[in-house]
Amino acid sequence: MVIEKIVEDVEKLPKFDEVEIQTKEGKEIKFAKGIVYRDTRKPIAVVSNRYTLIQFEEVFKPIIEQLEGRPIKSYRVDYYRGKAHLVVWFENDVGIIVRNSVEKSYAVHIRYSVRTNGDIFVLKGFSRKHIGNAKIDLEGILSGLEEVGKYWNSLLNELKNREVKLDKIEEVFGKKKVEEVREVVESYKQRGEKYSWYEFWCDECSKIKAKRFRSEINKVKAYEKLSKKIVKCMGEDILEIALG
Image 1 (spheres, rainbow, N blue to C red):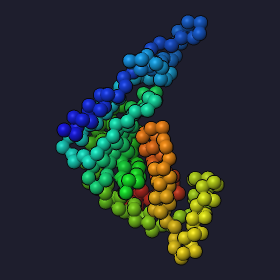
Image 2: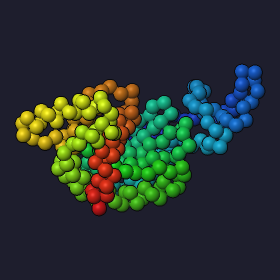
Image 3: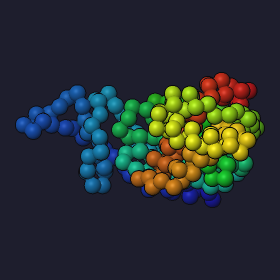
Image 4: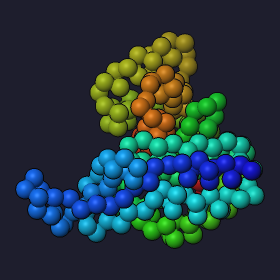
């Protein structure tokens, strides 16, 4: 029944049409075209003539088919300003994030994700311009879902065991953030403790939770951005260690 509900929610996402665009003088612009909402005809984007419009349900439905028979714990379907995502959580709080945008040239982004106490860490995934390729790749991703929990435990241990490096914070997050973190590091030192990347991640996730975002899509992207920055701080090899 969950699959049917996901499909129903996906079918409620906005539909779009391609339209010709003109100059103020009424001359057709041949190298570009407009994308408008089907119901209101309100414009959402101007794209190249080479761009092929693909409706959200055309992207998401083939992917949803691959979820049949899997133990889905929860899901979300959200839309905001030409972008839509499908977030599905399975057992052990391992999930996938599928994102599509009508004003961009890619067809789909798919990411592994994990969560602990509501905090989300987004792992590597892939982007595809063609739905067919994305569907094939998704089959491989879903077949490995059972292993992601183990990979996350390895990554979690690395996060907990590695101490935050202020020079890396400054390099990746900037001077304002490093001054903020420096105070936290000093308070931990005074207690004879080390401030780990895990604790830093939890602190930053708390700020994301407290912040008001314009959409759930923007909130999830904030988690993804944080995850990428932490991996960059720790070194790209951290994922190789965690993912074997």
